[in-house]
Length: 129
Image (cartoon, rainbow, N blue to C red; front, top):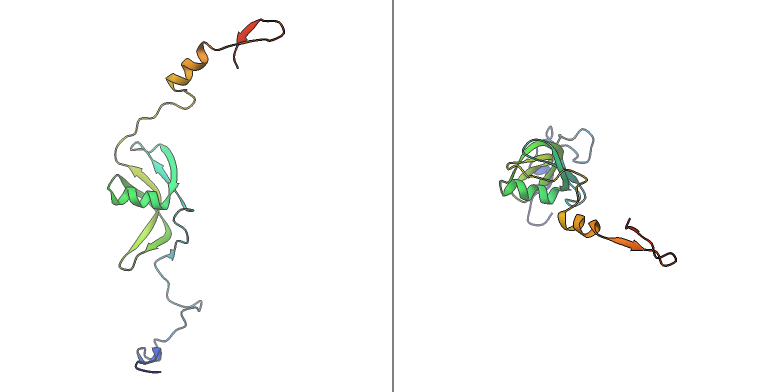
């Protein structure tokens, strides 16, 4: 070995272990492979489900103090200086008002309100479907 020590020079014989062996010391979590593929559930301030987003977006919401962690997964995000637990559920700090499901926007409702279809053969009109 040129200009340095071998790896086993730093460890005593009883401290040596194979990092790929099954009996290697447990890590605090396995790193996440793709921050865009893993999904995180976003809850409203009232704990109702709003959306599912990527880990990248969820971590950005947490760092900007828009949301708080509810539950973490076993995965971690690693940077050169820190290790972040990957959230699986986050909750927004402010309540987001959403329309009830199944309601159309006013412009869409007005578009179809007066629309009628005229039959080319009989010239009779009927509501558009």
